[in-house]
Image 1: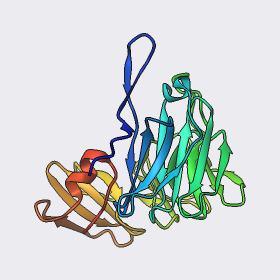
Image 2 (image 1 turned 180 degrees about the horizontal axis):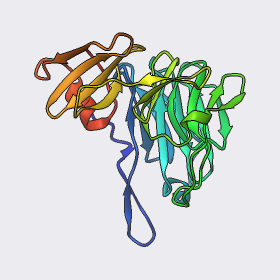
Image 3 (image 1 turned 45 degrees about the vertical axis):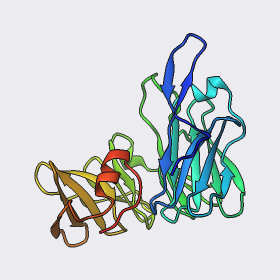
Image 4 (image 1 turned 90 degrees about the vertical axis):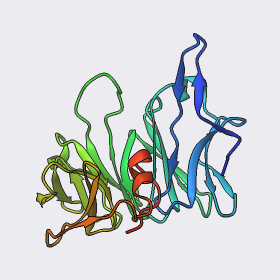
Length: 239
């Protein structure tokens, strides 16, 4: 499928060009792209071609700075985080309702009830991101134990567990639950559901159960979606 109005690059006055972020929802049904005619980020349902604007028209300066895109596991909720404006716009695709979340410039995962993101919005100026949970009522809670941890695959689809620094954390309490046990020399690629993680080891893939630690190797030749996930870090996950 081709989306003719989707921009792939933007060009500055000095002739420099930058790639434009895009994202595909977890279920593979919706895609987020920069709409060239309107200068807005837009979500499209690929089954119906219905679109929903996720941002107002953006200036070249806003687009020239880093943008972060994320969506909920059910592909209903979308976020566009604008580093230059130090804010995140959260939109309900079904209703069109949107709200701004100030000082959040990266989202590591979201559900209908909450999102986990960074409050450090000075890209390139150093500093440690202040990782927080923002709930639907607008309340913000710092995740103190995660401040110095590198985010692996972020928030689980059920919104209960967070992966960072090779460890698992409880989102409600912020407490460390224990290490994310992966096969040797492998890395986490994505959450499959609230209790299973997809891990990559060379050209092999494993499904890791974070509850009991069991690991099952997948045949990547017959597991739809794995190559797509590896290439785009998003898209439909089937196993």
